[in-house]
Length: 127
Image (tube, rainbow, N blue to C red; front, side):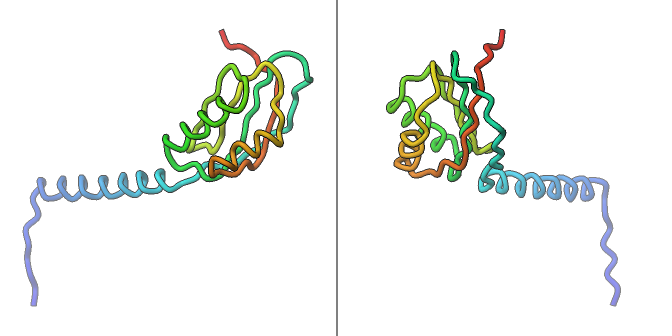
């Protein structure tokens, strides 16, 4: 038995839109559950001047996680600036000197996350 269903241009456009929405939905869901890659570079901080520490952190899933880590670091240390990115799985801390790594690890783990690695380098202010 043969069924002949006519396809209009509008039907094809609608199917394409649905297909594109499905692909976008998969990317959104993947982005929500994807935990950033943890890349740790070699430290180059020479112990003089302002230090920029890049922390590889496991367990961040959203902006609320970023805020939790930022607040915990601000409360525990004297720093110039802190910013986290859950998609990259990292936190960047700019401080007048290198922070105590053991206290930093303890602060992050008490917040419910895991410190995977630390990279230190001299901070270069961008103009």
